[in-house]
Length: 108
Image (cartoon, rainbow, N blue to C red; front, top):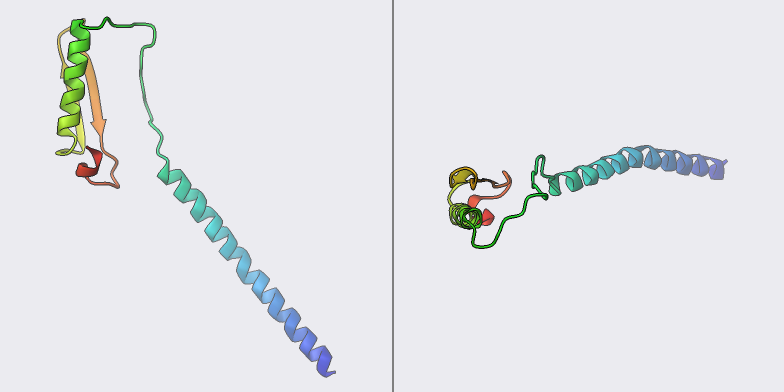
């Protein structure tokens, strides 16, 4: 009878451990999934016209270089910037957005 009580006690303890460990497993599993999703941001909209090329030393390339320099120099000062350089048909548009979970200095 003593062994029987001991056996039931161990069974009860094992069931309790299984019952408690399942929710913990799901909690850590979904926490990991959530962390992976948040740590790998995806760009919502990207547009790159692959059919039109530009010539080196063209006005478009100069405007493009000026825009990239402007975005790079300003990136440590702001977290968002929308810039336009040049006139049509050589206008270049650019947008810079620093992720919200890091400071502007880290974005430069």
